[in-house]
Amino acid sequence: DNANNVSPEGTVNFTVVASPDTTPPTVTSAVAGDKDPQGNYINKATVTITATDAQSGVKSTEYKLDSGNWTPYTAPVEVTAAGAHMIHYRATDNANNVSAEGMASFTIVAAPDTTAPTTNATVAGPKDPNGNYIDSAAVTITATDAQSGVKLIEYSLDNGAWQQYMNTFPVSAKGAHTVKYRASDNAGNVAPEKSVSFTVVEPGSDACPDSDTRETVIIERDDTGVANVDTGNGCTVSDLVDQYRDWPSHGDFVRHVDTVTTELVTRGVLSRRDAGTLVRAASRSDIGR
Image (cartoon, rainbow, N blue to C red):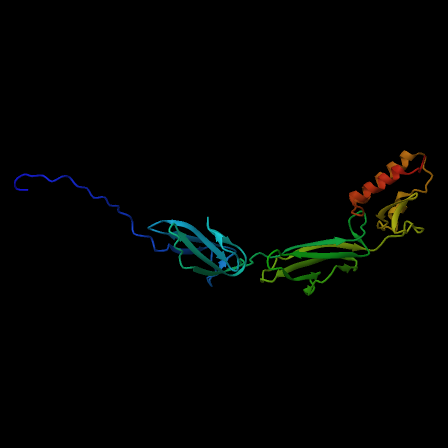
């Protein structure tokens, strides 16, 4: 006081706390990806969800894609399934305030097919030593398209009119031939025109009038399962194996079969696998022993 009297010292205690957090987090989403002119996402869309809370902080963020279950959000969500989608999302803060549920919708479409089909043609039939087809040739055309699928295969024989290809077709007219072919897919892409050329000749005289015409090649009692086809001059594979000749030794017979089958592989009559099967059967036999 004015007489310099000092009162005893007093104290008062108190605590300051932050006001309770009653505000839920703010949550937003963003969808990203390549779009077509209609605003659809091509092949995939990536959804990023962002949650903020200025007071107690974000505790968790969740999302639900279409009719799925709620899932913790930890990284951007990539959606690849074609079709319309809805993604729902929400967040919770450390005061357990839960945001209102948000939603984003978008549509994913497949990328447009701009790739033409892949085409190929094969010619099959018995051939002479010059590679000409004897009496007839069979032409097979194939086309594949991994995106929209093959719509149409067409061919033209010897510059004739284009016609739809349905199945393998024979060409029996003697002479040189060219088959042109092409294919289109369901997106309207057309493959470049290709062609295959070959020659069909008259069959020669029958070199084996008393031919072994069993369906498969049988060496002694061993049915090899190898098709006993005509090799091009009236002789079947069995005729050329010639197991009924009086062979001087077993080794001579096996070497003969190896030589014959090697030539038939070169001419396209036998596969290497079938040739090996015949040589092994000859080795197992008792012919020439």
